[in-house]
Image (cartoon, rainbow, N blue to C red):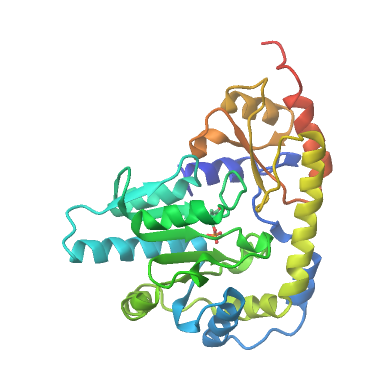
Length: 327
Ligand SMILES: Cc1ncc(COP(=O)(O)O)c(C=O)c1O
């Protein structure tokens, strides 16, 4: 019986593999996070956390809403947008997603009731930086994207791996942005994320959020504040690990571009079938995510988040090799 969604079940179900290249967050290994949480925690004040988060994002605090992770924030925003569109009597609200894309984004939208469409839509959803390709869109591509829908939900789960502004800072009307402490901060355990909503939606979203989500646990609020207090050094540590791993990858696979997030969609010339490749890797103790989960069946996704990456990547390359092993 699945406990999460298929990609998550795959990653969690094989987490014991000796070479784990499937973790897209930094995980519990950051020493700066351990140090930040070992200090006396700040007061568990959700409004203070909201203000501090808003300052790091660069938006007014009223636009920021706390959630239990980006997953919940995405679900909540989509549910809200669907409700608003139906209330405005839009026949059947439509959604456009990318391929490849982080799978729950499109699945969630369809589940909520959006009809997949091409062209102009009620809602456009993107992860940016993009999971699974690790790249952030350029300004022109971004403008085109926002211009093609009434509202854009941008999942900025990986934004903090580079020093780049939130998309919510440049558009206060159509952009809904979500974020989390689970990736660059490696703080899975506290389950804190957020949504930044357009200025005009503050009132109605606040009403819905208050009814549906109420408060984030006090301990999580205090811990999130502790992480923001040490934000600079935590992000320095996670960015340094990412950068070092990226240098290793680009030395061995020179065609890989500079990435903005620690995820890479790799198409191995010798392995045109990503599922077969992933299973062959697993048989050698290397865990990756089959690209099929993201809509890219000819690829696998590897993550550049772990301190053990150098060894894990060598084990990966040993299978990736110039030619597939004989059947
Ligand atoms: C694009 C994207 N959004 C959301 C999430 C989940 O974030 P959270 O753990 O904060 O719910 C992930 C996790 O891999 C992700 O890659």
